[in-house]
Length: 363
Image (tube, rainbow, N blue to C red):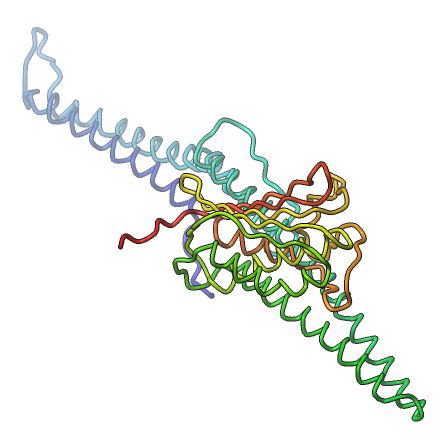
């Protein structure tokens, strides 16, 4: 926005310092006049016939007072300009850093030295903001690159299948259509997962009272056919655990956790346990599954987009898009909760979600 250029802060401070000195000097002269010169008689005779009088004192005092006033103003202007420059130097550093960040360079930091004061506090806050902003931008760039890569694969397969159908009219059209449908379904699933991940990260949703135990039962019922297909025992335990949030997002969170536990389980005969409870002011959801041993160093990467962990035996129907736990993490953060992933010593994973508790309404 275009604005008319005004006086700089440094000049305003300089004029303020000089003005205060001028006022102080004028008050001092007024005090001298009121309490000294007014009591000197206009004409007085001493022993030798010569004595100071008001006229002589005023005539002698006035030029000296004028010189003192001018000196005060000059000293106020010069000293104020230097002092204001020193005081505003940290603000100049912050302004330079802000302009640098405005050009897209987020790696610059102020790192102001000296004792803690308002400018140092502002500088540290600005550096912290740049740290978070740079981290967010890097994460978004990496996410966009991964998403582009993941979306490119089904599109490239679709183009290849279409080229084959065009160049070989005798090829079985039913097989091509089936494969195109599978590829298209995967692309749609990936797109929906990306949209859900974006929505969960923004946190702009309507909150309502939600019981995690009911959501756990619904997710288990939905995924029961998949568990039975893999001969995996699905068990829901615990009691009421109320929280405040989006029913849709929390259901997707629990569904993703349970589906991840089923798909990343033993080839057959494993178990998945879903447990809900209230602990103090926290609602807790635990999803525990058997499976192969998981390296501890791999656990922190599981919530990153498009990270699928170790190789698992997975069905084509639930091949996944690498966003399951990333969506879980995003939804948990949007609901002011925490997600803990701990590898089980015997193999498998224990996922614990803690969300703020909402007390149940009194009947």
